[in-house]
Each structure stands twice: as structure tokens, then as C-alpha cells.
Image (cartoon, rainbow over all chains, first blue to last red; front, side, top):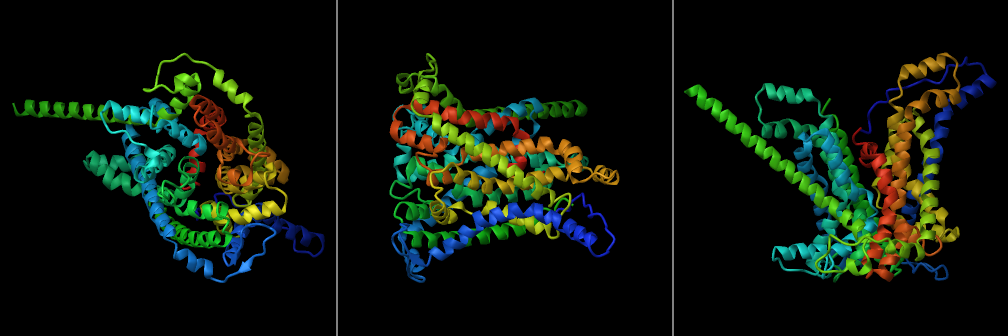
Amino acid sequence: MLVELPTVVLEPPRVASSPGPALRARVLARAEPYLYLAPALAGLLVWVYRPLVETFDYSFYNWNLLPTTPKVGVGWHNYSQLFHLPALWQAVGTTGIFMAGLVLFGVLLPLLIGALTQHISPKSRTVYRALIFLPVLVSPVVTATVWEFLLAPAGGFVDTVLGWFGLAQTNWLQQPNTAKYAVVAISGWKILGVSVLIVTAGLAAIGGEYYEAAAIDGANRRQVFRRVTLPLLSPTLLFMFIMALLLSSQTVFPILNVLTQGGPEGATTDIYYFLYQYGFTSFNIGLASAAAVCFFLVFGIVALACVRLLDRFSFYDN
Amino acid sequence: MAKGSDHRRRHKRGTREWALGNFWTAVTWVAAFVLFFPVLWMVLTSFKAEKAAYTSPPRIVFHPTLSEFSQVFSGGVGPPLEHSLFVTITSTVVVLVLAVPAAYSLSIRPVKRWSDALFFFLSTKMLPYVAAIVPIYIVARNLGLLDNDWELVILYTAMNLPIAVWMIRSFLLEVPKEVLEAARIDGANLWTEVTRVIMPIVVPGIAATALICVIFSWNEFFFAVNLTATKAGTMPVFLVGFIQSEGLYWARLAAASSIASLPVILAGWLAQKQLVRGLSLGALK
């Protein structure tokens, strides 16, 4: 993916190497593409990478965000304090649950749905896609709103349906255990559609000649899926896996912010929400920044490893 | 005799496969409906009167009314709608202005080490925003941009730029080399090359890219909730406030949510096919 070669490469027009205006024109022609690139690169450096560096800096201070209060340098104290917080380790565990849940909804279920819908007619596939794509499109806050009244304890739709089957009714978002899984299910509902579309696109990209060859060899459906489809789909699946991991906290955040505020009893506080609360609720900027640095480092390493893996895998088809 | 039983067996297997196929088709349709249902329920509820929204068990047949929509409109949805529109449109325009030249210098006239540059763009999409929010907040405060539309314009531009660069680059790569060379030989300068040769080919792709930026900006919540309040709050921020102040009024909440969702649903259906390309960050074409 990242190393694919450009199909169009045009050299800048050759100019005779005489000094003076010709040289200037040549330098300009060389520099031209860099000038086109510069504003976009600069924007991202200033608004994405510089704040990250500053976060690193803040992590060595004790500060409450007020311009009038001086920052007090405390060295590595924030880090040692952070690692001794029980709440941090609870948040790490919750992050793990959320990630696992989103891998289920962002990779495994879409693979299943993608494989099952592979053979339905193109016309109904259009309708099908439009239906499952809706949750992806609506704002995460709308998602939270909708589920708030679907999950409401009295008169909510979910409890009513469970009631038909004689199942116990639960106050989903008020109990530590159910709240966790409710958050996973809601976020999963939000991302499922796009993952199905990605799988479908990946399946469609597999050339028919592979299936023909498999058919000639007399392979049955399950063999074809295991031996042909799955290996050829692996770069796509790996990509979806990476995205489910890296974006899980970001996906979950609006749901937490609107529906649970990290509760009950901190059960739905993941690391993202944890450091957000330290920064913007307790205004403990040093501690929040230290947590952010750790979070960023772990994520950075995971992301880099995944990208390496993906680069190696994406040549599978060639 | 042997032949006959063989035939019958094959026929039997065909029926079983046919039944199994139908069964799975039915399962997938049920799954699709379950996925779609919450949105449908939201829209249905928004047309209910408040009393009808609250009944237990929930009612599917009811007397539709627009009263809750008018309640929302008189309840101050105007300013947040305007902020959302302004921030979304402005940031999308800025993204395109920055992304098209950048994508050009990563595809048609690539800089040396263009793949590193591309990786740099994409890397910013993988970073957790929360790790940068405190410094961003402080910078915004120092610049006097807290609770200001322009702060969100800047951040949404940074947020969407990598996707836009990636997508537009992939569209530019589809411009046939021969056509570009022919234009060069005919003495076309850069302006003619871009407006007469490249643009007509990539405009649909750029339109899809724009729609994706619109969807992301319109729905963005994290920056909006942390950096804006009353003076520049966008629709998601308004909705959260609405949940807190009128969360018990389901029909009204549903109406406000429906209003907030309509633009992105339209944009999404228009750009559905290309959306996959953007959302998968170019892992696929």
C-alpha cells in the first residue's frame, strides 16, 4: 500500500545548463513540487506533532491549566504517581475489553457477513449496504442518544423485546458489568457497517481466476473459503484489525461521554477517558500528560509494528 | 438403478444447498434490519407526540406529528446548525486547497521520498487525539480561539487532510500518463495541464473526497466538546447539552437527532462507493 509505485512520473522539462535565468528556472522547476507539498506538511506539523511534543513537556510539571498559576517542575514524579494509581490499571483492563469487543465487531462479524452476502444479487446488495451503512453515517452523539432510549429501563425497546421472551430486564447502563458490554455493543453497531463494506470490497477484488482454478480442482465451498478467500483477504483483514485496535478508544469516547461518563464505579473508563478526565475534570495537567505520553508510546509502537506487518502482507497477491 | 439413485442424491443435495442458501440470506437480511432499526426508531420517534413516545410497550402505530420538530427549532437549534455548516464547509474547502497540490506532488510530479511524505500524512491519522488535546486547548486559549469557529476549522482541516491527500492522490494516479505527455508536447503549461487535462478526470473523485470531509467534520465530537461551548458549539455539542437539559423528552431528542443526521445521511449515500476508499485509508482501492 504505502510503497506502491506511481504510474505517472514526469521529469521536469530539461533546460540547458547555462548560468543565469536558465539555472533559476531549473531550480524553480525542481522546487515546485516541494512547494505544493509544504503547506499541508507544515499544517500537520504545527497542529498534530507540535502538541504531542508539548504534551511530553507538560508531563514533567505540576500544573492546573490556569494561566495565573505557575508550573512547578517535578521531574518524573507524575510518571511514578501514575503507575501507582489503581484506577490506571482498571482503565488498562477496560481498554483491553473494548479493543477485543471492537475486533469482534470490526473484523470477525464483518468477515462472516461479507462471506454470507457475497452471493446475493447486486440489486439487493445495494439496498443491503445502504441499510447497514446508516449507523456509520450518523454522528456518534446521535448514536449515544438513540441507544439511550433504546436501552432505557422502563419502556425502552430492548427491554420490551427481552420481556416478550420472558428474559429479565436490566438497567443496562447502571451496572458495571452490563455497562461495559453495552458500550462495546453500541460502538460495535457504529463500526460494523463500514467494516462490512471494506470486507465486501476486498472480496470483490479477488480475481475470478482463483475461484475458477479452485473449482477445476474440485474444491468445495469451505475449502475455497479457507484456502483461497482467506489468504487473499488477509491484508484487508489485517488492516481492519489494526484500525479496530488503534481507533477503538476514539470510537468509544463519545458513547462514554454521553451515556456513562466512565461509570458506574469507573467500570467504563478506558485509558482515553481516564486521561481526559484527569486533564479536563481534575485539571491535573501533569498527570494527564504523563498518561498521554505512555498511551501515545504504546500506541505508536503498536501502530508501527502493524504498518510493518501490513507492508509485508500487502504483496501477497503479487 | 445405480444411475437413478445417483441422480436422486444429487437432486437432494441441490435442494439442501438451496434451502441453506435461503436460510443464510434470510439471516443476513434480519441482521441488516436489526442494524438499521435504531436509526429507523429514532426517525419514527421524532414524529411522535411526547406522550406517545413514552408508552410501555413502545408503540409502532401512532399519529404522526411535526410538533417536536417545531419545538426543536424554537429551542435554539439555529446557531449550532449555522456553526456546523460554517465549520464543515470552510474546513472542507481549506482541505481541498491544501490537499490537491500536495497530492499532485505525491503522484504526477512526485518529490523524492514521496512515500515517506505519504507515510507522514497517514501517521497523523493513527495518533490518539486525546494525547494532544491539552496543548491544543492551551494554544487555542493563547490565540483567543477558544469557543471560536476558526479553531474547529483549523483542527478539522488537520484531521481530514491525510485522508484527502491519500484519496486525491489515488485518483490522480488514474490519470493516463500518455494524455499528460501529449499535453506537455503540445506545450501546455501547468495551468492548462491542471484545468484541461487533470481536472476533468479527477473531479468526481474530488467531489467524493469533499463529501467524506463533510461527514467527518459534521459529526466530529471530541474537539468540539472540548474547545467550544455556547458561542461556537456545533450540532453534536448542542445535542449533548440537549440530552442534559431535555433528556427526558424522547420525541424532542429524537427530532433534534434526526435534524443532525439528515445532512450526513444524504452526503453518505451520495458518496457511498468512494467512502470505502476514504474510510479504509487507502488500504484498498
